[in-house]
Structure formats: C-alpha cells, structure tokens
Image (cartoon, rainbow, N blue to C red; front, side, top):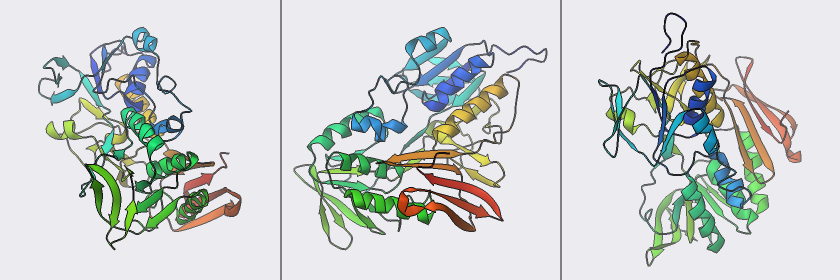
Length: 382
C-alpha cells in the first residue's frame, strides 16, 4: 500500500463492518494520508453506533440512537468514505481480490480489512426459541428489550458476565428483582479476580438481585408460545416472563472461514494484524492476535482494542508499520460501581488489594513473577 518513492498508494481499501473498529480504520486511513477509495460496508441499516451504552445508558433511556452515533453523516461525505449500510458481504474472492455483496455486486480491493465483530453465542436449550427469550447485542435488540422490560413481572438473566450484570443493574433500577443464573461459581469469573467478583455479587444482592451460581439449567418452559419459567436441573422452577441470555459472544468469522483464512478462536492475525493472506487484515472483536509480552494468542472484546488495532493497521497501510502492542483496558458500569481494568490476568500468582472493599472504592493488583500484570479498580479512576 506504500509506494517505494514515499507516496501513499491510492489503491482501493474495503472495510467490512462499521462498528468501532471499522469506522476508526476508515478515519485513521484518511488522517494518515491515504488518498484512495475507501468502502465501508455493513449489513445493519442503523448508522454506525457505540455498543457499550446499549446495556447501560440506552437501556435506562439516558441515551438515544442519535447520541450513540459514532460519526455524523457529513463525516463520511467529507472524508470520501463510501458508507454502505444494509449491504451484506456474501463472499471474499481472494484470487480476484474482491468482495461480493448479497445482491451480486463485486467490489475490488487492494487491501481488505475484516472488522466484522462478534455474534451472541448460541444458546441451544429446550425453549430457547420461546417468545420472551432475548439477547442484547444490537440496537434492535436493545429497543425490543427495553419494551419487554417495561411490561415484565419476572426477569431471569442467564449469564453473570459483563452484559448480564449490566442488564440486571438496569432492571433493578426499574424496580425489578431479577434472578441471575450462571454455571460458573462466581460472577464475571473469566474476567476478574475473586475479590472483584465478590464485591459485585454483594452489590447486586444488596440492590435486590438473586443469584444462582454454579447452577445448571434443564430447560426454558413456556405457555402458549411464551416463556413462563426456567427449570433448573435440580427440579426447581423459577418464574420468568422475560429471559435475557448473556452467555458471551463468538467471533463473527464466517466470511474468513469460507475464504479459507486461518482461524484460531477468531480470524488469526500476526503481530501486525495481518491474516494468512497478505492482502487482508482483521481487527477488533473477531481478530485473534499475539498479545505482546504474554506468549499467548487472545481475542479481546473491548472498544480500546478495536480502536487501537484500527489505528495500527492504518499506519501499516500508509507506510509506518509497527507491531500491535497496546495495553488492553476494559470497563463496566453496574449501578454506582464503575469497574476499570488494565491488562489481562493470565496465570496470576497473587492478588493484592489497596483500599477498603467495604467502602466501594478499591483496587486489586494482579502479580506474576513479581510484576504487576493487571489492575482492576472500582470507583478509583485515577
């Protein structure tokens, strides 16, 4: 993409996916001097929007679709970014270097950036197709869920990860007393230390939520096509006219799979975010990459990761290549607890707390080989 005489190439770039990663990639390419054509393609019809507030401010009615828009219409026009909404990419033709849209149109690329994000993990259980069983991934999901929550009497949340707990906190704010069920022994168990888990579980219980942890579901049961209860393996039935499934997400890597790109818990990329095809990069929630300094390959679902990877690819395509080595960070707002995390907790030897957990303001430092590798903080942004 960068010519030998110092000029930035004008060959066309196609970006699939107009979430945080895809929009940032297009913006950064222009910021970094790329002058060729940029097509930004997404199957959704909504203008590109922020996802994190969907389970928080948007659900509470504190944010509108307009306030969540990533960039205004004039941004794409002024930056000469061909934004194609409601257009699904059906296939990648690596030999011809083109993508084929569902309608049949082919769009050529010199470089392709896959920013296809993630999809909700399928919940294959008896009764999962009943009316009143919902996921929260897209703006359409959020609209539907907001309406259902207003009419619901008994809410059950399956999954005690970030999304499940964020939704549970909103439900409590609207006067509900949700039941949260997870097969894991503690909340947010894959993402945080035991101390942070305990603090959040205590907080949610104090607000009025009920927990069944280390618990297994047998089926969702309904009446007249609508969900009515959750039957546990032990036989207990929990009344439910709204069940929110929050059991995590999977990389949306089907396009890459069908194009025979290397897959490893998402689209496998190298330290420069290149796939097994030198003309294709992958960034954001769908990309599995070597985490700098860890010796591990990871796939991260975080806005910071999406934005920083987009900037990294734009720099490479405009002649300033460097490996991706940004420190991951995450956040989650649940009631009046704001959790912030920097780093990733792999094989931590020990956790050290600073501050008083009872005060609702404290930090936990994860140490490995006498080095701090992760910091988790509640209500202590500094």
